Amino acid sequence: MDCKHEKLTTYIYTYACYEDERSLCALEMRSLFGKESQTNILESHVKIDPSRSPFIKERLAVIYEGQSLQNLIEQVAALQVTGETFKVYYVKNGGHVKNEEKGIEYRRAIEKEIGLHINGEADIHNPKRVFGVMNVNGRWVFGDYLKSESVWFRHQQKPHSYSTALNTRVARAIVNIAIPVPSGIKAIDPCCGIGTVLVEALSMGIDIVGSDRNPLILGGARENIAHFGLSGEVKLADIRNITNQYDVAIIDLPYNLCSVISPEEQLEILQCARRIAKKVVVVTVELIDELLINAGFYMIDRAVVKKGSFTREVIVCK
Image (cartoon, helix red, strand yellow):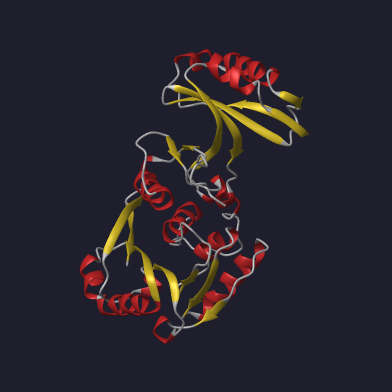
């Protein structure tokens, strides 16, 4: 099929993150979309399920756009919705539109006006299809609306955890940074601990395996995965003994009091990671740039994640 003249769909994403997560959020944006936004809005032709990201709130797939609301309404009047009910939802844009300050009555009036011009059956309580209307970057847009589900939040309630493990929001973002396009990718978490990264990746349908050299925590990792109805391979293995090849490895370098490792051991882990994977995302609480260079890596992007006085770095390497 000749797609040369097919118009690419514009997707509008709204974002929200804490100040301590801003660097990580920007790295996730660059990984998923090839660019970042300085506002809470990102526009792209790349289609991402908003529930993949802990920072994306919603997605609007643009069908019509106009310079004025009236112009948009005229275009919406051509829309036929058959075989399913619909509702219209006003997507707030961080207060950038003066009239948004008028509050809910203003937004509901626009939802009603747009809805009245759509040819179809409206159902505000249980619609099969949700449309969004939004004022963004100086124009009005209308399209299919999808709200993000906080999957990471549900994963906080897992049977096993420990205080120094990655939190689920950070783990989910790291998975997106490591594997922005999951199709055909084989991944490994060779220092998987209790499986926080594995749970996030498996919940996105990513082909990932986990391993760890500590037999005492593998049962907890397997229980955490099963607790959420997921299935994945978790093996007892030292990274030095792994021979399979992977597209991506995610390495959360051991750092707690029970897993004190020397710079020499860190270098060995990194060298092994480079041997088994084409791309490696490293999570560290220490400055390891020199070790990464010595292991033969090129550092292509990075972010800082803070939690109080505790700081982690996320480094993308090839």
